[in-house]
Image (cartoon, rainbow, N blue to C red; front, top):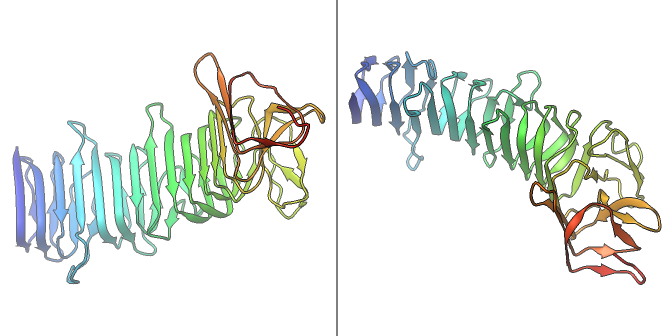
Length: 377
């Protein structure tokens, strides 16, 4: 097989790379308009670095025909890169695009398993379309419409629209066929997730209307500085739930009530068939009630509104099994092994009344605990 490298050159006619060429590297190459680079199906690696004028590919079943690139006459503009590499001897490959402007809709076929986009701008009315066979996708500091199977913010086009270059998204397929999804610094009106999830993590994400996780499975959920309404109608329980630095959250398992309906009624059980209402006249925020019957691990830290944990501690006087985790306090319930030996750690909590452990906790850690007079734990 031949490795082919070309630098500081002009391509003035359409060029076909023969099957004997396995790798092609092009740097600072000017490609005349209407010229086509025809790739053979056995190409192992293809990269274009800082080339001038549009590049039109043909014959590559990996990404079909695409046309990318803009003139680079502006001093100081970062290098634009297009890099494709086949994964081992498989017929699937990984593709990386950086510092590019894309002015047409591009379909990446089933042979692209891993995709990475960095500082890529998709022009208005155009899309990057990802095939459902992808294994990993990363979108970093990009802008525009991306169609990724199983997640969308626009119901009509089924695309996710990225409006801000600071956003970061990563989706990875696990060995069991579910997905790990991570979103950072996004703002959406609506967001719908329909793929089966192993872990979903939302960091600095704001939802104006609703986030709907409509899949049948989500093992682990992490909300850090998340703000919005969360609907999870088909998920009965989580293995792990982490809530950090929350200021405003509405979670609904079975029934969704608008926030304005009643300021005192806080509704949202996380599991079970019964809706639980808690009276709290001090806030209009819906307070999540977390029932730990089916939870492996629960982590709550520094949320600005109360989070009520059910079935862990019982108030002996009122006979209510809801323990409030308030602002600046922390709650950690962890199962350590197959024997279900649990550890409960409370940090900066205030104990008011007489509380008794209800769950099978073998290890108890208390840090910075205060209490009212005659209160007990």
